[in-house]
Length: 566
Image (tube, rainbow, N blue to C red):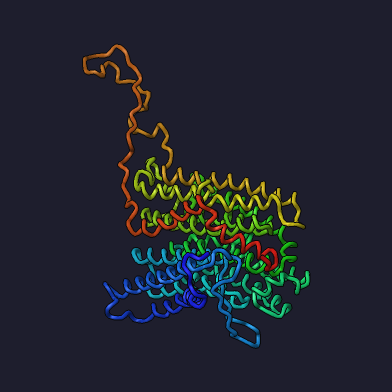
């Protein structure tokens, strides 16, 4: 079923435009603005150009989704297959199915919202021209990663996003931005070198780099030893980008230093490239190798879940001087642990849960980083102790709409039923209860129990954040009034009524006196509401109607795990 019947040639054109248009837009952003489009100045013109290009890409992605045949989501659609380097049999092979389409839409949406946010609140730093161009290059590389069907093209697209993100952190970031940017680029480049060796091993041993053909072959053309080596090499590169514990240490620094837009894109789409590679490449192409490493992948995943949660609890406690952006970054380590656990089960239930959790994490954590950026702009800091303050008011008293939205995002992140974060975690735990044939059921049920414990830790630190940031610190009773203690008697010999001397004295009730007037902050702005409402609405929609997403992914996952057979 298609909502609108669109011809295959138009679908091909739409997918090609979606991938290439941001790259062309990046080049145009560096050129002088036409006289009639300058507006108030060249800076405003180039930021408006970014909104226009990303908006056009989002519209094209929505039209592509509308024309997608939802009755056959396991079939590659909008495909383009052109020979590029005949000597190496490298082809420009593009296509989408039920696995890649949601990620394509998520990328287009988040990049447009980032461009819109940057237009109304320009980034503090060097030229907006370079900023806009880098965001568009980043979008092109991410979209290409989810659309290409050739191993070498996948690698090129995978690497294409590194340089833009490096400069976004290094030039427009906050404190310690250069160190964080170097850590990000060194970790990911090192992982990519190892991944390239694994991709070349698969392509040369099988005689093709075509991902569809390799998935259909389902590893039958590769020996078990080759598959094991390939999974180890490719898995390391993908695990760094995911990031998987213990290869995660670049992520908190990068998020803490990155500008708001950089953090949103890093958490919302770049981390998904690693988990997408596990599903698209390793599960169907090297199933025997994945089966060998699946228990270890699951073990690292659940350690990441617990470790990320404990790190967040440590940052959230009073007096720890924890940074809220850093806390959300560590929460991503835990959430991506659930994605990796679902993939490690090698079951349709687990993999569907992983893909659902991918999308939910992109929506919810993208919203969280937008909100934390707004809070930091208002307070001038993301330090939790400072944000909590000592007035007992915090965000609910100073900016109630902003506080309410932050609380909503936090409870969505902890997996509240009825919101998007719930289904991914639940399905991955169900998948771990009954893993694929050949995997140890007792081991995976142990991983399931540890993962379930991680959900309790997640709820704990998120509720602590809501209490401290939205409600403020609890003010001790003795500090409510700087006057005499609450149970101090009236001065001897004076009747409180003024009628004369009093024969007796009695305790007077405490009268809380605020230490100071609570300063108000700018509440939710119109452009902020326009930027964040789609993410909140989709979080609710995916939570109440999960079949919208699972109806796309499940047939494609079933086919992928069955070796290309529906």
